[in-house]
Image (cartoon, rainbow, N blue to C red; front, side, top):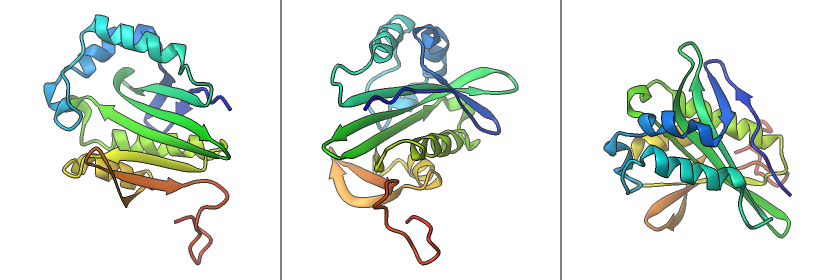
Length: 182
């Protein structure tokens, strides 16, 4: 199954499928070294980001994996402010989407990442995806808040020191007394 990014609209945002041409503007958006506190590395140059985006746009070499990447565009000023992504993997009869997000420092604390992540989870609910997961550093409280806003909850599983967060989406998702998915 191949999943391809599509334009997603929210009240304040448009999630645009990633293009190589977004690299120059995104290099400026992601230029704050503080964004790398929990993920490591340093800000990418426009050329390095262009090269990375070219690889991402080309797609995953494994046919069981889809790389779905978006830039987050804030409407009004029509500027790019961050990215969201879902790596959708099918193993046997189960399909899992691993999410990640980043919003540039000047646009943080405005609910943008949470709004984008909720929109992405909503988009994934309309596809044959069984689970949504994210791996979050235990000290990254802002990302934990984004995951919570998107309906994910922490699990007991750790990967490389990060806590796995999860939201079941598929037909086997546990339902609470009201019928809502837990």
